[in-house]
Length: 121
Image 1 (cartoon, one colour):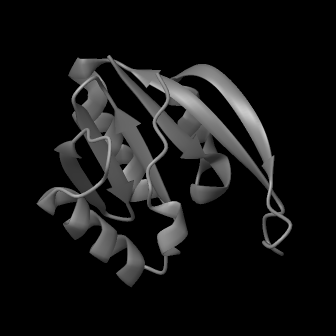
Image 2 (cartoon, rainbow, N blue to C red):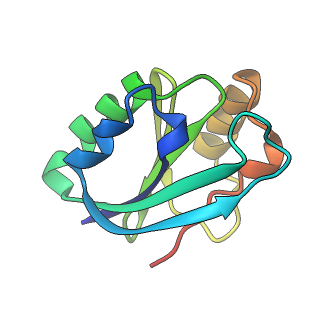
């Protein structure tokens, strides 16, 4: 079983979130963002059998400059616009797979401070 974190504001079609089992929704203030001063972070649950299809579907819906991520006990999927990275779950992000995902994300305009992927069990 995978858990994931997706901001509704990050999706071209936020109704995509209806396809996933919701664990909770958290509203976060981001006053520095003029376009989206509140972010709605959905924590979702996805089965092992559905993770590949879900991440591809999410990648197709993500707006430029945003990401989503999904994790299990030992694997993390980082989903960016039109691209999915699969990497080992680490206590400190340093694997080659993470560094590739980070470079791609920064090249897509994502602020590096957001790339310490939050994982909650």
